[in-house]
Image (cartoon, rainbow over all chains, first blue to last red; front, side):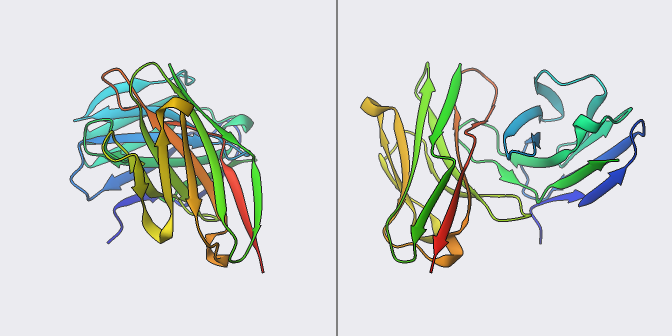
Length: 113
Length: 114
């Protein structure tokens, strides 16, 4: 019973393509996140949704578009992929307030050829 | 604004030795602090959290951390390292505002030598 699941686990594609990553959580949480982990392991938040409303939108190229169809799902669509988009993307979820820990998925490793 | 600094990108200890991973934070309001562990090719797993209750926090796998406001620190310790503790460790902070932004340190890679 995976708490936060992401698909696909690996994604290899060419520059210029459009791709999506899906995330689902079965913890009943109301807040979901996308993080990017670069090649140096640095983790940075990209987006956050609370009850399907966007609450955090960091400085991310507008080629990245999150979408939350319901509280349990948060997808990430990326247009016109670039070499610099190669990274591991992590989905996470939490129950509301800032003192609650975030639970992470296993990540999607995106490689741009 | 909030930030976290992890001193030492790589810490190496012998099996059975004390583990000490350092984390200092900066926050304009009382922080909430977390330690996460990441094993190779896996996601992040919560080790422990500080949310303004007891300053000495115990977590999983024998780890603990102490919140010291005067030193703005939240160092992670374990009395005796096991080979299975080898992983990347991240300190993180949330503070202030109405959002739930988690700001991470750059991570510390712990290696355990036999």
